[in-house]
Length: 358
Image (cartoon, rainbow, N blue to C red):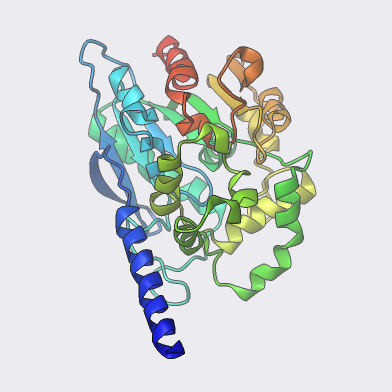
């Protein structure tokens, strides 16, 4: 009898798990035309094109958008018709969403074996991936330059390219929660730094499978980790599921090492230690709009202001999104992009700034 009860219980739990899986499957309805782009060092990238939905406005430059660390382009499409890309399209912008190397839509990246493995650093993003994306978008559109929007690491890599490689194909830049140091330490970054020696056990930081598992368990199990990336009170439940299942990517050990060294040295350096990307912010001369969230546990507003002070541009704006402005909540690291009211509180400010420069 005991054995029968155990078997029945197993089948019940298995059925419950399957039901949860199929009923909880989420999709991201906003879809563009996906295209493949090859870098000069032979990596395949994905670029998704979402053309303007408002022909009444002819914007001067297209918009190239890049995601952050451990992520892919999909979270810019979260919240569906209220997503960041939809608002850009409705404002008359030709939008191009890019994925950096190692993202699953382009080609498989092996853990140990394969044509490509997770052996790249941030330097490859800066040198090869941005170059390929810029060249592709300009060739496709015939534009002379692009507007660039980067969230978190997406902003970091463009800061670094502009400051260190004499890049002249970018007209204007919006950096959302993009630091160039982690001083003062946040609690989350300090805990990550303390665990750095454990990386030797893995070929890659396996964020993607961990996120898939997390999407099927109560949020309380992973709240301390998730809260570093977004303000949970400012993010819808469906969006959280979209993020965990569709928007997360593994992190290479070399790129996370550069971030951890940034906590030690107070600056972001190239993998070989020869270039201070942070110091080279003084070479960035184009118009820049820096966006920060008051509740950001990864990129405190203080470190975003430090970037603002270091930039060589005469046209630079720094803004913190918080309740103090009369907003619905203090914004976290990623809900600046997909928060409950981001489409009425954050996106219009970014679009207004872009409009003035287009």
